[in-house]
Image (cartoon, rainbow, N blue to C red; front, side):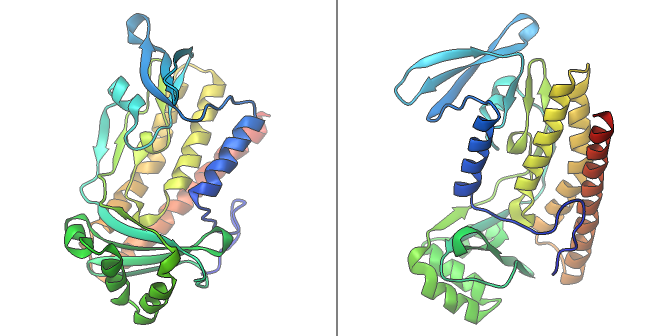
Length: 298
């Protein structure tokens, strides 16, 4: 479909993480951040009343050091070490999850973004940078082993072929330069995302099934909301960040869980996507209103 420009958005973009992550790191450095590569957090430090006061790190060479901080932000993914260290409570957990095999194919350029569904499976094609295309095949998590065990490429092409044999043949021709990745699925969740001296953002804070392809957008959105809360310095700002996050995230989370269940007829799936579209529009309107507030305050 054509994208109607709205809220400053006039196109869809899906760069690979190999490109996006570099862009983000370079932007952070330009903004004054100090970046340490090949360094991992091994623990948090705490002070009075168990308030987080910093973190402990180890480099690739085995050097250990500590950093003091007024606020430690865990942006360290679904299996967040920060979340584990602080015992962040899981507020909501998804009931369903999809499982996916995907790869990036060169020399194969579909016209636009494509998602296809049938009871029990889904495939999609997402154009990305440098002429590549991400192609995925998804099934309910309980069907993953049977569908993709042994020869993942054969299972992948078999799933694609159920939708379109010519597409499966084209992918077979392009498969020589593609590596397939398997994701057996993981349960979605919404975590408590702030406490004394700590906060969570991105997948560390809120993870939903990737079938609706909205995760990076979520991460950017929540990072902006958390940044605004931190910079305000107001009492209760982090609690308001979480409340705002929950207000936007919960409808997206619920609809995505329903789609990832694969327990729908095609008419029901259509209704889910109409609801998803309305929810994303409401999300955009909310973010626009917050930007207007910021401009008025300035």
